[in-house]
Length: 491
Image (cartoon, rainbow, N blue to C red; front, side):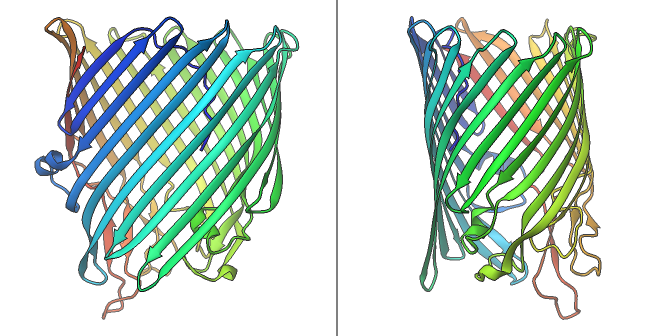
């Protein structure tokens, strides 16, 4: 769980709306009083109709059913204080027949997930130069998966408290410091011929300090350091970070950031090898941004080094010695972003492109290669236009990603396979109207409009067939083209 200390103000007005969708219902309500406000939203979604209308690549035994809710209460306290309480839950249930092509069977699989999160934060100005932010949070995620009659229950629970003080030393210099305490519980129970239960608890106290210094009208510097200790990993860490920004003109600036980071290994590794160390990373980021009127151009380059990544002889090995922190990796790339809401009347468009060059020697990799999740080239083009006379807002998005690597055990070279490129064209139309003097919206969203046959990778059998070849199966989206229609009315 993470304490959110963002201090959004009160709701601006009383409002309520109801939306009827082809996949379910959504409702929202907000009330504003003089010094407080309350907002509530709820969602119910059921994919049964969608699955009947659009071809599925999955043999569903139970279409996904989703429930979602949120509550936000805000209260002004005194002249500058703000108390905020937030709570949310999310539940999803589904079932399918999984194609176990290696065994030649269709294995029944069911999944039920329930997630709950809540936090309360308080922000105030203690004096002319002192600010305080504090908060507590709690979360619980429970997932039950039943595969071929073998139930697996996994529960992740977290609680945290955070306190931050800010001192406005001068107009050009301020200091921020504080601490937080996070406690996490993880448990997993597998029931087969016998019951296997695993449990872990991690206490993570930390202290941090940060300074912001406006050295001149053009140059600003931020430095920080974080100290933390994990009771589970029994390893302290000191993580320095620094960033700087330099204005090159009225509308442009350069910025640079460097920092050390660490991350706890995945619970699925720690439950078998609790003596693993944290995975570590060094980040270097250089950014240039130009913003004038309603146009934005941004380019960002980065270099990241990873060390002490988890490696293992085989996934889910029960032998602790099969796991170690000998993995490493790197990533370097550049991102471009351009947005223009000025040049074309009634239109807004943006283009983003990223190039990634990365490699990893981790998990069960025998050598350093491009990992299976990495796509070297990614492009997104979005165009939106408001047709004022028709009261229609239209938008179209094109997404492209170059092929990702995968390992073909039939090849002597590790990870030399490449999927075909990913393509998607999505369309959305929003019609603004009124009904009984109430504002209404009719919204249509279509994904993969042209029905591109996208493939995310391939899964292979663990043993070869009679011809000595490892059979494979493509990993594809659950559906090709899909559409969602929504009607919403403000009450």
